[in-house]
Length: 75
Image (cartoon, rainbow, N blue to C red; front, side, top):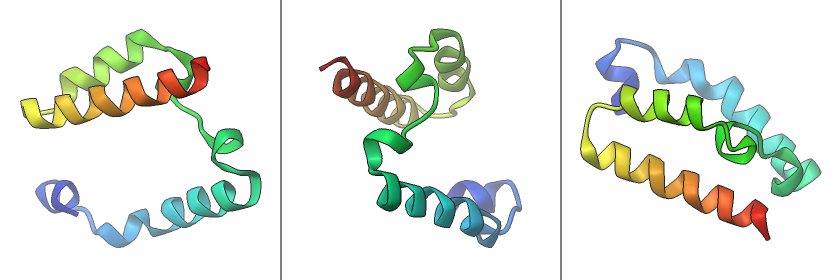
């Protein structure tokens, strides 16, 4: 919500995306629903997204989540 407020975008706009994401996770299981650069090991996109984050706290959180996703799928 904070990010939406900073960019003057209604948080409500995320509702359809969040609902669809959760529905897929419950229907197919999280392992079959996970997508994105972390799962694909798309280091170029990961780096661009890290650079777009404003604070070191945001970057640290993103890196931690990315590594957790990658470690999960390497098992």
